[in-house]
Image 1 (cartoon, helix red, strand yellow):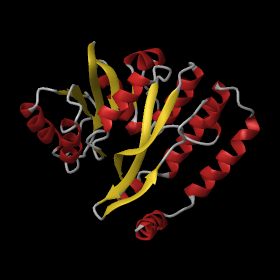
Image 2 (cartoon, rainbow, N blue to C red):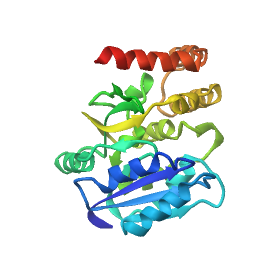
Image 3 (cartoon, one colour):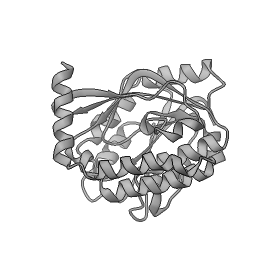
Image 4 (cartoon, rainbow, N blue to C red):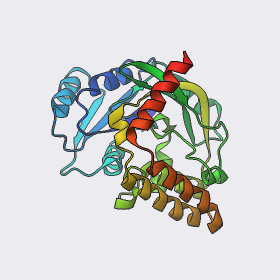
Length: 270
């Protein structure tokens, strides 16, 4: 383990068009003591060419390749095996980290040793510009899982020991696109604690492709994870009722309505 180093783990799948902006935002951080570990999940576009070009220019990049398309959880577990840093941070291949994100998150963890993980607020953006922020409460606990997903997954920074204690991400059909949600149930069950900085240090891409990925199947899997997590944390069964109603309501909203609502939010934010 290299003291002070941040190991950034990223799964990449068919994101050649957005990867340069994402990678540049990591390599351009004010906190330079880092390694960027990227696992290519058998992309069929130009992702590999983009990754090879960047790796040839910066020795801080570690490139990995899955033998078969395996999903985000498996890709991140693959990355975790190559972590050398004192801290582990997340990043997605279609988003952007604000330039001083790691500097501020490392400082927070150094100054607050009682926390095992720190996340932050993120701001939505697309080709038309930035939109609303996605924030989480500063203080979260196991009981927070009753109502919310406690952390914005791609914004987190934690320690290798946390991932080791949790055996990484669960690779299963029912956790596809809900791997972080399932991780948080186990995180709190294991007695870990986390905090959310209220500064938007992360920009999350919210275009129609991202909206279309929220399918009925992915929402159903998230509800399955909710059932598992509520049992794990000993929550009463009737707490599942609001979750079920919300799942049904969201499943009936057309993609175009979500896109229109995002545009309306952006317009009225100005």
